[in-house]
Amino acid sequence: MTSRGLDDDGPARLLRRDDVQTVLASLAAPDEETRLVGGCVRDALLGRNSSDIDLATTLEPAQTLSLAIKAGLRAIPTGFDHGTVTVLVARTPFEVTTLREDIETDGRHAVVRFGRDFVRDAERRDFTINALSLDPSGQVHDTAGGVRDLGDGRVRFIGDAATRIQEDALRILRFFRFHARYGLAEPDAAGLSACIAAQHMIDGLSRERVRTELLKLLVAPGVAEALAVMDEVGILPRLIGGPTDLSRLGRLIGARPQAGDVARLAALAVRSKADVVRLQPALRLSKAEAAALSSYALAWESLDRRKPIDLGTMRTLTADHDPEALMTALASMDPSQSPPIAEDAGVFLEAVGAGRAQRPTFPLTGADLASNGITPGPAVGRGLDAARAYWLERGCSDDPSAIEALIEIAMNAARTK
Image (cartoon, rainbow, N blue to C red; front, side, top):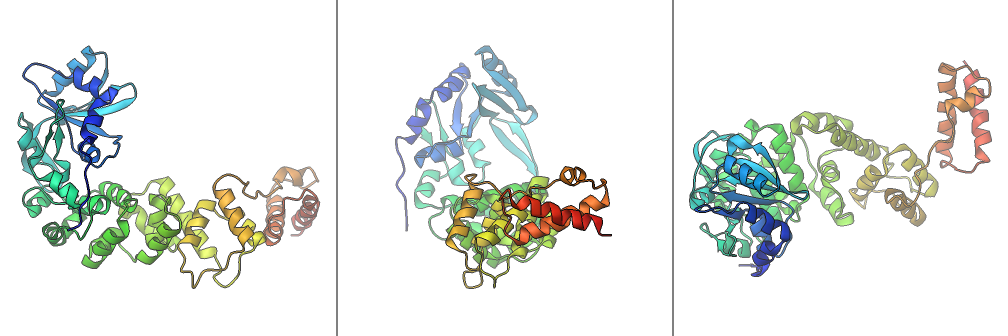
């Protein structure tokens, strides 16, 4: 079996952080215990820094709040009824949650009560690699076999996989996301089987939760392989609600590995504005995300696969389309069907996208026509439209001498009814 080496000194380095020491010292109390838990411990064992640090404690929320404030720290009861207090050390937030035990679950929400048993608290988590805890003395507590699974690159549910999914169906998507980030071989067979059997439960999840998990999955290192499995077993179509193209996503990642989650979603599932209209309610996309996907759709549809792109054409494209959307569209195209791009055109697009070159901007405004005697109104619009079309056709020249020609075209069109 493929395996990875773990960083034995990672947990100790995590504990040596000044902010970690500060928050642990603030919560120290007789007969109480507070540990670092979950992802930060897992990442420490992998030799990675973690920006999100969670703690579990035997303290009840009111005690956590009181002790943190007494130590001079800012404390916010962000999820007080569920046992969570956010403690700020400088500007770094630490989520401190009282140990809990599940009483009742319905696949979406859990009824819990506070407890004092770290083992019971670990048992209610999703995967073994997320059930690790680290006490202030430096001991890593592993009651579910998470350290071994982490080394083996295996994402395994704690206990019975079907039971864990019944408690919260979002764990189906988390299974694939964590496998894409931490898995080293094929997905755990028992976990995969349980996800396939329970995939209908995804339909009952809030679209916001689905969106969050999918976008996180899209930027995981093993996303292509994870999505291929999800597609094969029917889970990916259930999420997207329409056709997908894993090859386009693969090409984008290969050409632009820095592409973000929305760009990757565009390559995976968007070819036209109709796809964006479908995805927006399916994933509860934000206005900004929907706008970015729409920009991609427009860029994708505008590209003539038969026409080479020289510098003038690229200037026109960048004037008409968001450069990031244009780069995403070009990078995700099948090379055998994509237009050839001149070297200077490619350099220009990259420079505009990186902010090293200015995106072409149409040099005329309505004020320019008004100053030449055109009455504000429809005539101004006709004039600007005609001049802009001429400007685009000729590669969006930024030569000052071209402005006179544009004004003449605009004036002639404005006076034509």
